[in-house]
Image 1 (cartoon, one colour):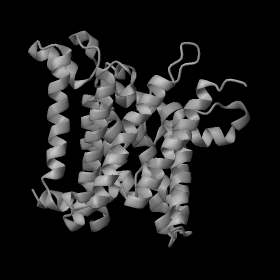
Image 2: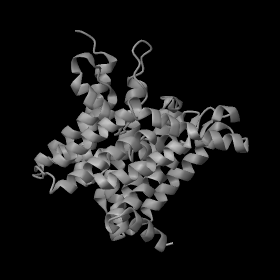
Image 3: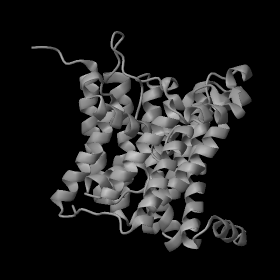
Length: 367
Protein backbone atom coordinates (compact mmCIF):
# COMPACT_ATOMS: atom_id res chain seq x y z
CA UNK A 1 0.00 0.00 0.00
CA UNK A 2 1.39 3.38 -1.02
CA UNK A 3 2.23 5.64 1.91
CA UNK A 4 0.22 8.86 2.06
CA UNK A 5 2.28 12.02 1.57
CA UNK A 6 2.58 14.64 4.30
CA UNK A 7 0.93 17.21 2.03
CA UNK A 8 -2.11 15.00 1.46
CA UNK A 9 -2.36 14.09 5.14
CA UNK A 10 -2.19 17.72 6.25
CA UNK A 11 -4.79 18.74 3.67
CA UNK A 12 -7.14 15.95 4.71
CA UNK A 13 -6.88 16.84 8.38
CA UNK A 14 -7.22 20.54 7.55
CA UNK A 15 -10.43 19.85 5.65
CA UNK A 16 -11.82 17.89 8.60
CA UNK A 17 -10.90 20.55 11.15
CA UNK A 18 -12.30 23.23 8.85
CA UNK A 19 -15.57 21.31 8.59
CA UNK A 20 -15.85 21.24 12.39
CA UNK A 21 -15.24 25.00 12.41
CA UNK A 22 -17.93 25.50 9.76
CA UNK A 23 -20.51 23.42 11.61
CA UNK A 24 -19.75 25.12 14.93
CA UNK A 25 -19.81 28.66 13.54
CA UNK A 26 -23.05 27.98 11.68
CA UNK A 27 -24.86 26.28 14.57
CA UNK A 28 -23.80 28.79 17.23
CA UNK A 29 -23.81 31.91 15.01
CA UNK A 30 -20.22 32.60 16.06
CA UNK A 31 -19.41 35.88 14.31
CA UNK A 32 -16.82 38.48 15.22
CA UNK A 33 -18.48 41.27 13.24
CA UNK A 34 -21.80 40.31 14.76
CA UNK A 35 -20.14 40.53 18.15
CA UNK A 36 -19.14 44.14 17.50
CA UNK A 37 -22.60 44.90 16.09
CA UNK A 38 -24.28 43.48 19.19
CA UNK A 39 -22.06 45.66 21.37
CA UNK A 40 -22.79 48.86 19.44
CA UNK A 41 -26.49 48.54 18.72
CA UNK A 42 -27.79 46.27 21.50
CA UNK A 43 -25.30 46.59 24.34
CA UNK A 44 -25.00 42.79 24.27
CA UNK A 45 -21.45 41.54 24.93
CA UNK A 46 -22.14 37.80 24.86
CA UNK A 47 -20.84 37.08 21.35
CA UNK A 48 -17.82 39.28 21.99
CA UNK A 49 -17.14 37.25 25.12
CA UNK A 50 -17.45 34.06 23.05
CA UNK A 51 -14.73 35.49 20.79
CA UNK A 52 -12.53 36.32 23.78
CA UNK A 53 -13.16 32.87 25.30
CA UNK A 54 -11.99 31.30 22.05
CA UNK A 55 -8.89 33.48 22.22
CA UNK A 56 -8.14 32.46 25.82
CA UNK A 57 -8.57 28.76 25.03
CA UNK A 58 -6.36 29.11 21.95
CA UNK A 59 -3.64 30.84 23.97
CA UNK A 60 -3.65 28.16 26.66
CA UNK A 61 -3.58 25.35 24.09
CA UNK A 62 -0.92 26.83 21.83
CA UNK A 63 1.36 27.85 24.68
CA UNK A 64 1.03 24.39 26.23
CA UNK A 65 2.18 22.85 22.96
CA UNK A 66 5.08 25.30 22.78
CA UNK A 67 6.22 24.91 26.38
CA UNK A 68 6.16 21.12 26.18
CA UNK A 69 8.34 21.28 23.08
CA UNK A 70 5.77 19.71 20.77
CA UNK A 71 5.84 22.70 18.43
CA UNK A 72 8.01 25.79 18.09
CA UNK A 73 5.77 28.81 17.68
CA UNK A 74 8.79 30.93 16.80
CA UNK A 75 8.34 29.55 13.30
CA UNK A 76 4.94 31.25 12.97
CA UNK A 77 4.65 34.41 10.84
CA UNK A 78 3.22 36.33 13.78
CA UNK A 79 6.47 36.19 15.75
CA UNK A 80 8.82 37.56 13.13
CA UNK A 81 11.49 39.93 14.44
CA UNK A 82 10.58 42.45 11.72
CA UNK A 83 7.91 44.51 13.43
CA UNK A 84 6.03 46.65 10.89
CA UNK A 85 3.49 48.21 13.20
CA UNK A 86 2.17 50.72 10.65
CA UNK A 87 1.02 47.96 8.34
CA UNK A 88 -0.61 46.12 11.23
CA UNK A 89 -2.56 49.18 12.37
CA UNK A 90 -3.58 50.36 8.89
CA UNK A 91 -4.43 46.83 7.85
CA UNK A 92 -6.45 46.16 10.99
CA UNK A 93 -8.46 49.36 10.58
CA UNK A 94 -9.14 48.57 6.92
CA UNK A 95 -10.15 45.00 7.65
CA UNK A 96 -12.48 46.03 10.48
CA UNK A 97 -14.15 48.65 8.30
CA UNK A 98 -14.35 46.31 5.32
CA UNK A 99 -16.03 43.51 7.22
CA UNK A 100 -18.88 45.81 8.25
CA UNK A 101 -19.41 46.75 4.60
CA UNK A 102 -19.35 43.10 3.55
CA UNK A 103 -21.64 41.90 6.32
CA UNK A 104 -19.05 39.68 7.96
CA UNK A 105 -15.36 38.80 8.20
CA UNK A 106 -13.56 36.12 6.22
CA UNK A 107 -14.76 33.11 8.20
CA UNK A 108 -18.36 34.36 8.35
CA UNK A 109 -18.26 34.90 4.59
CA UNK A 110 -17.35 31.24 4.08
CA UNK A 111 -19.97 30.06 6.58
CA UNK A 112 -22.68 32.09 4.85
CA UNK A 113 -21.52 30.84 1.48
CA UNK A 114 -22.00 27.30 2.72
CA UNK A 115 -25.50 28.28 3.79
CA UNK A 116 -26.43 29.42 0.28
CA UNK A 117 -25.65 33.13 0.49
CA UNK A 118 -24.58 34.25 -3.00
CA UNK A 119 -23.61 37.67 -1.67
CA UNK A 120 -20.90 35.92 0.30
CA UNK A 121 -19.70 34.22 -2.89
CA UNK A 122 -19.07 37.64 -4.41
CA UNK A 123 -17.40 38.87 -1.22
CA UNK A 124 -15.15 35.80 -1.09
CA UNK A 125 -14.09 36.28 -4.71
CA UNK A 126 -13.15 39.93 -4.23
CA UNK A 127 -11.56 39.27 -0.84
CA UNK A 128 -9.42 36.53 -2.35
CA UNK A 129 -8.43 38.48 -5.46
CA UNK A 130 -7.48 41.62 -3.57
CA UNK A 131 -5.67 39.62 -0.89
CA UNK A 132 -3.56 37.95 -3.57
CA UNK A 133 -3.00 41.28 -5.34
CA UNK A 134 -1.77 42.74 -2.06
CA UNK A 135 0.35 39.72 -1.22
CA UNK A 136 2.02 39.09 -4.57
CA UNK A 137 0.46 41.34 -7.19
CA UNK A 138 -0.06 44.94 -8.20
CA UNK A 139 -0.92 46.27 -4.74
CA UNK A 140 2.06 44.46 -3.23
CA UNK A 141 4.33 47.40 -4.04
CA UNK A 142 2.19 49.73 -1.94
CA UNK A 143 2.03 47.15 0.84
CA UNK A 144 5.81 46.93 1.03
CA UNK A 145 6.10 50.71 1.15
CA UNK A 146 3.55 51.00 3.96
CA UNK A 147 5.19 48.23 5.97
CA UNK A 148 8.65 49.73 5.52
CA UNK A 149 7.59 53.14 6.87
CA UNK A 150 8.07 52.09 10.46
CA UNK A 151 9.62 48.63 10.18
CA UNK A 152 11.59 47.87 13.32
CA UNK A 153 14.27 45.19 13.33
CA UNK A 154 13.88 43.81 16.84
CA UNK A 155 17.13 41.87 16.61
CA UNK A 156 18.91 45.23 16.91
CA UNK A 157 17.44 45.43 20.42
CA UNK A 158 18.43 41.93 21.40
CA UNK A 159 15.07 40.34 20.63
CA UNK A 160 14.56 37.28 18.47
CA UNK A 161 10.84 37.85 17.99
CA UNK A 162 7.95 40.19 18.77
CA UNK A 163 6.64 37.78 21.38
CA UNK A 164 5.58 39.53 24.56
CA UNK A 165 7.32 36.94 26.77
CA UNK A 166 10.61 37.75 25.02
CA UNK A 167 10.07 41.46 25.61
CA UNK A 168 9.19 40.98 29.26
CA UNK A 169 12.23 38.77 29.79
CA UNK A 170 14.52 41.38 28.24
CA UNK A 171 13.05 44.24 30.28
CA UNK A 172 13.01 42.45 33.64
CA UNK A 173 15.85 39.97 33.42
CA UNK A 174 13.46 37.08 34.03
CA UNK A 175 14.01 33.78 32.31
CA UNK A 176 11.99 33.35 29.12
CA UNK A 177 10.10 30.51 30.78
CA UNK A 178 9.04 32.62 33.76
CA UNK A 179 8.14 35.54 31.51
CA UNK A 180 6.01 33.27 29.33
CA UNK A 181 4.06 32.02 32.35
CA UNK A 182 3.44 35.58 33.54
CA UNK A 183 2.18 36.80 30.15
CA UNK A 184 0.12 33.65 29.67
CA UNK A 185 -1.58 33.97 33.05
CA UNK A 186 -2.19 37.70 32.71
CA UNK A 187 -3.71 37.58 29.22
CA UNK A 188 -5.52 34.23 29.24
CA UNK A 189 -6.56 34.65 32.86
CA UNK A 190 -7.75 38.19 32.23
CA UNK A 191 -9.81 37.12 29.23
CA UNK A 192 -11.39 34.23 31.13
CA UNK A 193 -12.25 36.54 34.03
CA UNK A 194 -13.75 39.06 31.59
CA UNK A 195 -15.89 36.34 30.01
CA UNK A 196 -17.20 34.57 33.07
CA UNK A 197 -17.77 37.57 35.30
CA UNK A 198 -20.93 38.12 33.26
CA UNK A 199 -23.96 36.21 34.55
CA UNK A 200 -25.57 36.57 31.13
CA UNK A 201 -22.61 34.90 29.45
CA UNK A 202 -22.42 32.16 32.06
CA UNK A 203 -26.05 31.36 31.23
CA UNK A 204 -25.38 31.40 27.48
CA UNK A 205 -24.54 27.78 26.73
CA UNK A 206 -24.38 28.37 22.98
CA UNK A 207 -21.75 31.10 23.23
CA UNK A 208 -19.68 29.14 25.74
CA UNK A 209 -19.69 26.06 23.51
CA UNK A 210 -18.77 28.20 20.50
CA UNK A 211 -15.83 29.77 22.32
CA UNK A 212 -14.55 26.46 23.65
CA UNK A 213 -14.72 24.59 20.33
CA UNK A 214 -13.42 27.40 18.10
CA UNK A 215 -10.63 28.09 20.59
CA UNK A 216 -9.63 24.43 20.79
CA UNK A 217 -9.41 24.13 17.01
CA UNK A 218 -6.56 26.67 16.87
CA UNK A 219 -3.97 24.64 18.85
CA UNK A 220 -5.26 21.50 17.12
CA UNK A 221 -4.33 23.10 13.81
CA UNK A 222 -0.92 24.08 15.21
CA UNK A 223 -0.45 20.44 16.22
CA UNK A 224 -1.45 19.16 12.78
CA UNK A 225 0.97 21.40 10.90
CA UNK A 226 3.72 21.45 13.54
CA UNK A 227 3.79 17.82 14.67
CA UNK A 228 1.96 15.62 12.19
CA UNK A 229 3.19 17.78 9.33
CA UNK A 230 6.79 17.81 10.51
CA UNK A 231 9.00 16.10 7.95
CA UNK A 232 12.62 16.94 7.16
CA UNK A 233 12.14 15.92 3.53
CA UNK A 234 8.60 17.21 2.92
CA UNK A 235 7.90 19.87 5.56
CA UNK A 236 4.56 21.64 5.94
CA UNK A 237 4.66 25.32 7.01
CA UNK A 238 3.63 25.91 10.63
CA UNK A 239 0.13 27.37 10.37
CA UNK A 240 -3.30 27.52 11.93
CA UNK A 241 -6.61 29.17 11.08
CA UNK A 242 -6.73 32.38 9.05
CA UNK A 243 -9.15 33.45 6.35
CA UNK A 244 -7.53 36.05 4.12
CA UNK A 245 -4.55 34.78 2.11
CA UNK A 246 -5.93 31.20 2.02
CA UNK A 247 -9.07 32.46 0.28
CA UNK A 248 -6.90 33.94 -2.48
CA UNK A 249 -4.82 30.78 -2.62
CA UNK A 250 -8.02 28.74 -2.90
CA UNK A 251 -9.16 30.72 -5.93
CA UNK A 252 -5.76 30.26 -7.56
CA UNK A 253 -5.84 26.54 -6.71
CA UNK A 254 -9.21 26.11 -8.41
CA UNK A 255 -7.90 27.83 -11.54
CA UNK A 256 -4.59 25.97 -11.72
CA UNK A 257 -5.59 22.64 -10.18
CA UNK A 258 -3.48 20.37 -12.38
CA UNK A 259 -0.31 22.32 -11.66
CA UNK A 260 -1.03 23.40 -8.09
CA UNK A 261 -0.43 21.86 -4.68
CA UNK A 262 -3.04 22.01 -1.96
CA UNK A 263 -2.01 23.27 1.46
CA UNK A 264 -3.51 23.39 4.93
CA UNK A 265 -5.13 26.82 4.48
CA UNK A 266 -6.83 25.89 1.21
CA UNK A 267 -8.16 22.68 2.73
CA UNK A 268 -9.53 24.56 5.75
CA UNK A 269 -11.37 27.00 3.47
CA UNK A 270 -13.04 24.11 1.69
CA UNK A 271 -13.82 22.38 4.97
CA UNK A 272 -15.52 25.45 6.46
CA UNK A 273 -17.78 25.83 3.42
CA UNK A 274 -18.71 22.14 3.37
CA UNK A 275 -19.25 22.06 7.14
CA UNK A 276 -21.55 25.08 7.03
CA UNK A 277 -23.40 23.57 4.05
CA UNK A 278 -23.95 20.29 5.88
CA UNK A 279 -25.12 22.12 9.01
CA UNK A 280 -27.52 24.37 7.11
CA UNK A 281 -29.03 21.44 5.22
CA UNK A 282 -29.35 19.36 8.39
CA UNK A 283 -31.29 21.99 10.32
CA UNK A 284 -33.29 23.35 7.38
CA UNK A 285 -31.58 26.74 7.28
CA UNK A 286 -30.08 26.45 3.80
CA UNK A 287 -31.51 29.02 1.42
CA UNK A 288 -30.32 30.96 -1.58
CA UNK A 289 -29.85 34.66 -0.88
CA UNK A 290 -28.93 37.36 -3.39
CA UNK A 291 -28.39 41.12 -3.45
CA UNK A 292 -31.42 43.31 -2.83
CA UNK A 293 -30.24 46.10 -5.16
CA UNK A 294 -27.17 47.49 -6.91
CA UNK A 295 -26.03 49.54 -3.91
CA UNK A 296 -26.09 46.40 -1.78
CA UNK A 297 -23.86 44.68 -4.32
CA UNK A 298 -21.43 47.61 -4.50
CA UNK A 299 -21.16 47.77 -0.71
CA UNK A 300 -20.33 44.07 -0.47
CA UNK A 301 -17.78 44.25 -3.30
CA UNK A 302 -16.05 47.25 -1.71
CA UNK A 303 -16.12 45.57 1.69
CA UNK A 304 -14.63 42.33 0.39
CA UNK A 305 -11.90 44.20 -1.49
CA UNK A 306 -10.96 46.29 1.54
CA UNK A 307 -10.88 43.17 3.72
CA UNK A 308 -8.49 41.50 1.28
CA UNK A 309 -6.10 44.44 1.35
CA UNK A 310 -6.37 45.07 5.09
CA UNK A 311 -6.10 41.42 6.04
CA UNK A 312 -2.80 40.99 4.24
CA UNK A 313 -1.39 44.22 5.69
CA UNK A 314 -2.45 43.15 9.18
CA UNK A 315 -1.13 39.60 8.64
CA UNK A 316 -4.55 38.18 9.41
CA UNK A 317 -8.22 38.67 10.16
CA UNK A 318 -10.45 38.46 13.22
CA UNK A 319 -9.52 34.78 13.40
CA UNK A 320 -6.02 34.89 11.90
CA UNK A 321 -4.78 37.64 14.21
CA UNK A 322 -7.63 37.86 16.70
CA UNK A 323 -7.34 34.23 17.81
CA UNK A 324 -4.53 32.40 16.00
CA UNK A 325 -2.04 35.26 16.23
CA UNK A 326 -3.03 35.98 19.82
CA UNK A 327 -2.31 32.35 20.69
CA UNK A 328 1.37 33.02 19.94
CA UNK A 329 1.41 35.98 22.38
CA UNK A 330 2.75 38.26 19.64
CA UNK A 331 2.60 42.00 20.29
CA UNK A 332 1.61 42.61 16.68
CA UNK A 333 -1.45 40.42 17.13
CA UNK A 334 -2.66 42.50 20.07
CA UNK A 335 -2.26 45.67 18.01
CA UNK A 336 -3.98 44.07 15.02
CA UNK A 337 -6.90 42.88 17.15
CA UNK A 338 -7.43 46.32 18.68
CA UNK A 339 -7.19 47.93 15.23
CA UNK A 340 -9.72 45.51 13.73
CA UNK A 341 -12.19 46.20 16.54
CA UNK A 342 -11.66 49.96 16.13
CA UNK A 343 -12.19 49.69 12.37
CA UNK A 344 -15.32 47.64 12.95
CA UNK A 345 -16.72 50.17 15.42
CA UNK A 346 -16.09 52.97 12.93
CA UNK A 347 -17.73 50.91 10.19
CA UNK A 348 -20.82 50.43 12.33
CA UNK A 349 -21.05 54.17 12.85
CA UNK A 350 -20.59 54.72 9.12
CA UNK A 351 -23.53 52.43 8.34
CA UNK A 352 -25.59 54.15 11.02
CA UNK A 353 -24.78 57.72 9.93
CA UNK A 354 -24.50 57.13 6.17
CA UNK A 355 -21.24 59.03 5.63
CA UNK A 356 -17.63 59.08 6.77
CA UNK A 357 -18.04 62.61 8.13
CA UNK A 358 -21.13 61.60 10.03
CA UNK A 359 -19.33 58.61 11.49
CA UNK A 360 -16.43 60.79 12.68
CA UNK A 361 -18.85 63.31 14.18
CA UNK A 362 -20.82 60.59 15.95
CA UNK A 363 -17.67 59.12 17.46
CA UNK A 364 -16.26 62.51 18.51
CA UNK A 365 -19.58 63.59 20.02
CA UNK A 366 -19.43 60.60 22.37
CA UNK A 367 -16.00 61.56 23.70
